[in-house]
Image (cartoon, rainbow, N blue to C red; front, side):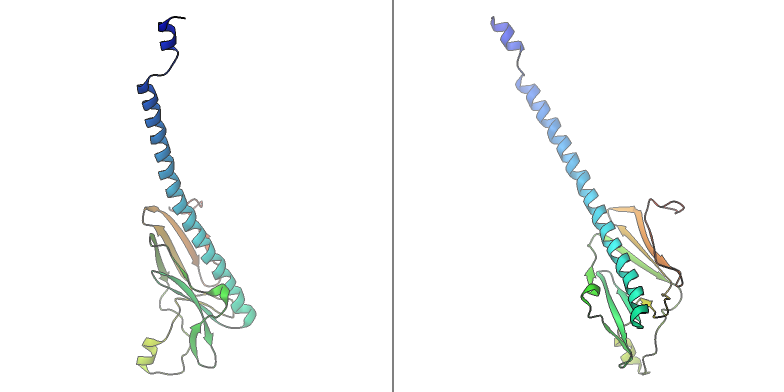
Length: 184
């Protein structure tokens, strides 16, 4: 066997480096793509969780003959219950309805029709009214709900809009970017 034959059967250092660079680039692309997918999965999971909790709150309001409410802000949401004796909204004590937060990268916008329906507080003192807890969405014991539309979008991909909505009389609907008939 001559020197020339053995030299041609192996890889050069440059060929090995080119392959390593290509593998590194492909791996970094895969990591970047998986990161975006993780955010999308987390967003879908958070919205589904809120959707199920809202349906459960609506059913609990009917079963327990009490009004439940949902308070939403930029950081998260929590459920409240109307205390008939005190004639005011109080935090819901059930563990299922404990407060939950939104990820920092998720934007939430609430649209309601007109003014929020409110139950009589029993007192007309304006200062007390300002300090009183008021839900953004109410689940009534009659089965009705405050008409609303909640829009969710990730700040990294604002073209992907999710919606939870109700006309107040029918069940809450969840609409995802892939739903037919939507203008996403």
